[in-house]
Image 1 (cartoon, rainbow, N blue to C red):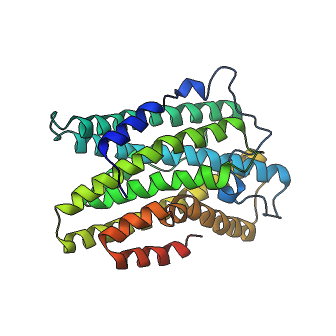
Image 2: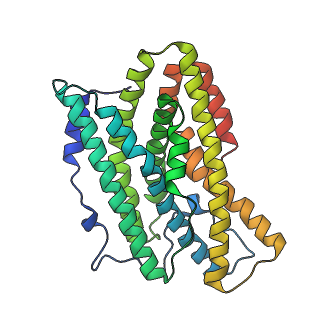
Length: 301
C-alpha cells in the first residue's frame, strides 16, 4: 500500500550517492566481462554465435539498456515537474517529495549519459539507437495522465527485478554496471511509492469509466514500447555484425531477432507487469484489469 509523503521524503534523503561515485576516473568498464545479467540479455545459450560474439551482444544490449532509460527520462522528468507545479507550498511534504523525485530523475539522466559516454569510449564506436527521443516522449505524453503514471510505476518496479532478482546473484557481470543497476533500483524503489500515491490521488478524482480508459491507454503504451524494442533489437544486431566483422545468414539473423526481441520484452515489459507492487496498484483500480495484465505479461516472459 502507498505510504505517506513524509516517509517517502525521509527515505529519499537517506540515499545520497553521486554519479561520480559510480563511473569516471579509475571507475571504468571491464570489457572482458558481461554487463547485463543473462536473465535479461539471454545471450549465453545462443549456440550459433561464437563466445566472443555472445559477449559483444551482451555489451551491445547493455548500451541499448542505457539508451532506453534515457528515452524514458524524456517523458518522466517533465511529467513529474508538471505534477508538482500546482501543489501548494503549504502541502510541503508532498511538494518536497515530488521535487526530490524530479531532482533524482535529472540525476538519472546524468547517470545514463555518463555511462553511455564511458561505454562508447571503451567500446570504440557509438552504437545506434532508436529515436528521436522527443517524438517518443510526445507519443507517450499524448495518453491520459493516469496511463503515463501507470507506465512510470511499471518501469520503476521493473528496476527492482533487474537488480534484486537478476543482478544481485550474478557475480560475473561488470562491477560498474552492477553498481548502476543497484543504485538506480534504490531510488526507483522510492519513486514507485510516490507514483503509487500519485495514481491513488488521480484515480480518486476520476469516474470508473475514465480509470478503465486510462488502464487501456497503459496497455497501448506497452504495445508501443514493444514495437520500439523490436526496432532497437534490429539496430543491435546490425551493431553486432559491425563489431564482430561477421555477417549473419538470413536464417540466423531472423532467429536472433526473435530471441533478442523476447529477451527485451521480458526486460522492459514482463518484469514490470509481473511485479507484485505494480499488480497490487492496478487491482486497487480494477480487479479485472489485474487479471488481464497478468495474462498479457505471459507473452513477455
